[in-house]
Amino acid sequence: MGQFKSSCKTPPQHLKLVASNEINQFNCIHRTNSTIEDENQGNFTDSGELVHNWAELTRECLINILSRLSLEDRWMGAMLVCKAWLQVCIDPCLSSVFDLATHFDSVTDLPRFWTPEFESRIDNMIGSVVGWSGGSLTEIRGRDCSDRSLSLVARRCPYIKFTLSRVVLVSPT
Amino acid sequence: MSSSTELTEKKVFLLKSLDGVIFEVEESVAVQLEVIRELIEGDCARPFISLYNVTSEILALVIEYCKHHAETCSGGTSATIADEDLKTFDNEFMNVDENILLELCSAADYLDIKSLFELTCRTLASLIKDRTIIEVRKMFNVENDFSVVEEKAVRKEFAWAFK
Image 1 (cartoon, rainbow over the protein chains, first blue to last red):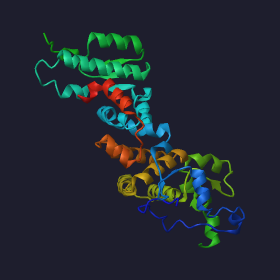
Image 2 (cartoon, one colour):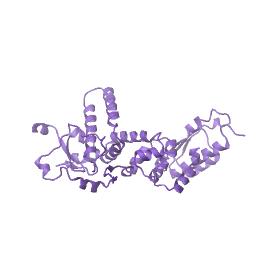
Image 3 (cartoon, one colour):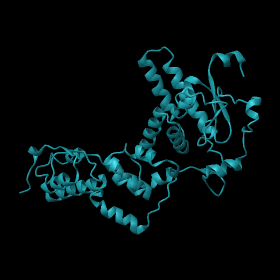
Image 4 (cartoon, each protein chain N blue to C red):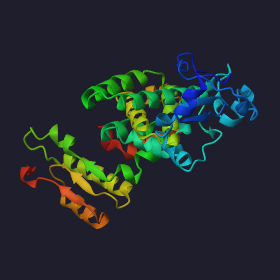
C-alpha cells in the first residue's frame, strides 16, 4: 500500500537517515502508511497500488510540458486527451506566437499551392489562434494569408507583428 | 554517522519529507531548492524543514540530483567536461517510469529547482510526442472525460487540423 511501482529507485546509499534524539522528540520518523494515504489523497487501484496521475500536476506544469510540443502534436493529440488538456492547449500563453511556416514548407513546391482550400485552412487556423490568444497574439510567421485574416488579426491583436513574405503568393486564378 | 566534527565544519540542513523521513543535506545542496533558500538565509531552517508535498522516495531522488549537480559544478573540472558529465547524468536520471517522472516534475515545481523542472518537463513532453491519444491516456493514467458528443465537437471544430 502506498508504495511506488517496483521500478522506483531506492534512496542512494549516501543519504543516511538522521535519527538523533532531537529529531525523535518530534515523532516524525516513519509515520504509518495510512496517514500518508490520507494526506496524499492519491488514487488507489483495486489491488491497493497508489496511482499517480496528471491531475496532481499544476496547470503551470502542464502548460510548460505541452508548450514544448509542436502545434500539430498539440492539436492532433494533446487536445483530445481530456478536458483539462484541451483547456491548456487553448490557453492564451500558448498562442502568443503562431508559426505557420511548416504548413507552407510542404506545399510551396507545388505550382498553384494557394488554392481556395489552402486559404480556407490557413484562415481557419489563424481564426482559432486569434480567438484562443484573447488578443495576446504577438507574432505570426508564414508565407502569406488572406486579406480576411489580415484584417481579423489587425482588429483583434494590438501587439501583432507579421513575418510574412507575400511575394511568393501564387494566385489560384 | 561520521564524526561530529565533520558536521560542525560543513553546514548541514535537515529536510523532512511528507512521510516523515528526515534527510541530511549540505548547504550546497539545500540552496538549490529555491523554496528553502530564504529560510536558510533567514536562519529559520532549524531544527528541520518540512516539505509537505514530497514523499521520501522522491525527495531522495531530488537530493541525489542536486548533490550531483553541486559536486560537478564545484569540482574544478572544465566547463565543457562538467556540461558533458551533467548531460550524461541527467539522461540516466530521467530513466525512470512515468509515475516517478510526474512526481519529480511536481516536486521540482514545488521546491522551485529550475534545472530539474526544465529537465522533467522536457522529458515528459518527449514521451507525449509521437504517441497516439489513447497511448498517452494509458501511459499517464489520464481519464478520457469527453463524452462521445463532446469529442466529436472538438474534432469538428478543429477539423482543419486533422486533414
